[in-house]
Length: 188
Image (cartoon, rainbow, N blue to C red):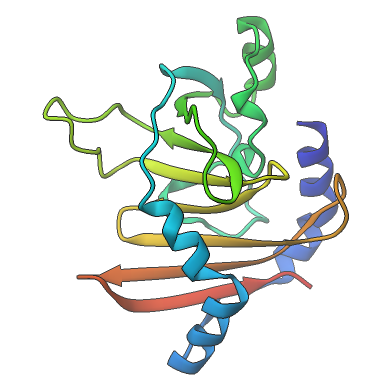
């Protein structure tokens, strides 16, 4: 949690100066290659088994971080919540943002990291709750992408292990299987 907080604090001034940019079709195609969307889309088709719900701290992103789809909490920029904590640790860590229930995949995804389901459990008929955030992680424990309803949000990181920096976020909105719109934000 400390490395995420440090990353977050260092980047606050960078984030506040950055703006979302709507992408043309050509720019979107370039961004899809840059963010390796084909590889990441394959993870969305994988089947996982999940742990029972665990309660973890929920930390909002703050006003200087760009507004994210699906009320994404910045505490999920890293998958450290998959590590079991005591109730006292969760209560202490969640003092400012509250708590939220997640289920963690028992298997790793194609990118080498875990998957979180965030939100209410599946419906009684076994179908997914469409209000879930499906959060996918890289082998280095940082977020790769997440899916919320008909949105796919991808993250780009650079740097050496333990000192990675978030440099860009790419958002795609689908409608009936086709891209309806896309935008990105780059952090200077």
